[in-house]
Length: 175
Image (cartoon, rainbow, N blue to C red; front, top):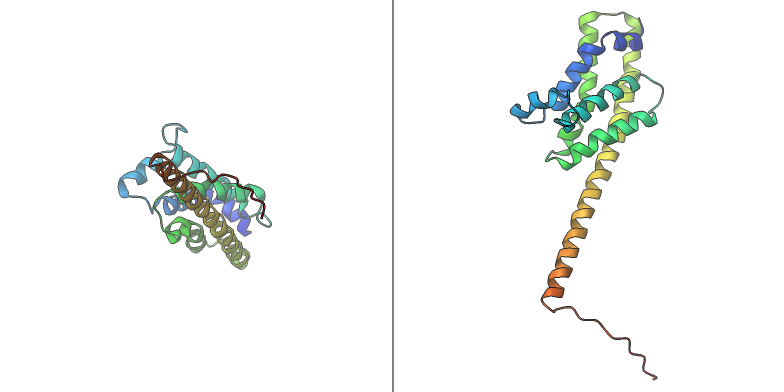
């Protein structure tokens, strides 16, 4: 059995464990709420994270990193970038997939074909992790830029209200 077939057959157990890894960084009380992602409007974070991770899972065995996979990563990491998570916590779920797949392979023993393909899959997961780091860094940069711009606007308004800002007239003197 090939690794791709194995991933398709074991999707339920692997994806379930991967979702647990994704939600493990959240406080214990919210973990259960986020997992119940049935309603898009009553639980938008859980719904989005669950749906995007499912699509990302189907894209991983494919050749290269598709635009669809990058879009999923972008949607997941935008949410995680605005939350109070360390970068290692925000991105750890990607690398957890390697351990989960290895554990499932050990349990099911599908044959040497899948074991040999595992190295390629782990390399692909590492590449996705690097892409995710770039996406996460760009999201955080955008957030910090927005904060800086807002502080600049606030300071400018305060200075105008305190009459500490004045217009410099255009003076053109002949010298």
